[in-house]
Image 1 (cartoon, rainbow, N blue to C red):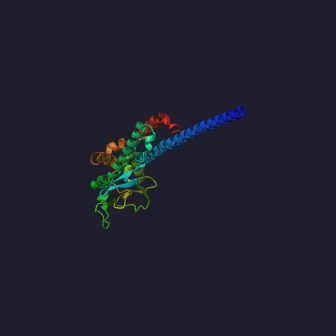
Image 2 (cartoon, rainbow, N blue to C red; image 1 turned 90 degrees about the vertical axis):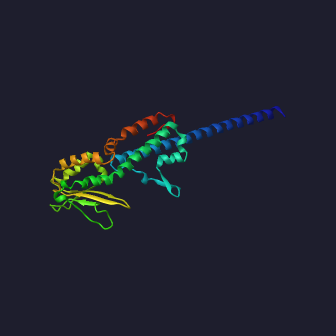
Image 3 (cartoon, one colour; image 1 turned 45 degrees about the vertical axis):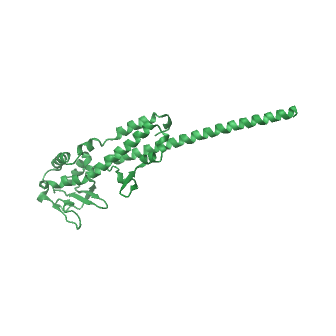
Length: 266
């Protein structure tokens, strides 16, 4: 082989090696970028779920297990899979720091348990509101509806024939300030009735107070009711004190941001 041919061959080999090396670097860089984007999405999905849970709790309408995807385990059992638990189930949480993944799963579970416990307390709140009828003029009345419990629908008498209503959820009792504000409408210049309602596929209960339907002032009524709620509704005080979850979620977010793979985490 002539010297010129050798020079051409060496040049071609060198070009090939350089091109291959550049290609490999490009692949690695592309993979790193793709991995980074995937990890960022996992962190953002976690953030989105926790932020949504926080907002619903602040609105007194916390999410509960039945709001999420239901999977059958066998003929007689099933489980609900919320978003972060689903990331764990599909293995996507393996891409982030294990301690952060574990905290995210546990925090999601804790917040959904909180919502489920609050929802489960509604019927007991209804019982507390209707058990001592001395608070209501002429003791109020239970309205009978076919096929429903005799104590499912309670209302005070309506001396002023009020037709204006505001609707609340029984879980609003976990926000005393909101209850105080609502009950002030019973005696304001723009009076209106207050109706609390729970309605599901299997249950409907209501509790309605009309202006001038109480035997005591709204302030006295509220203070007495809250004393009863603390005693007669399981974990009522604990659920009230646990309602502010913002700090817990904030601590988790700050810990998550310390992870090297959490760049650009919200």
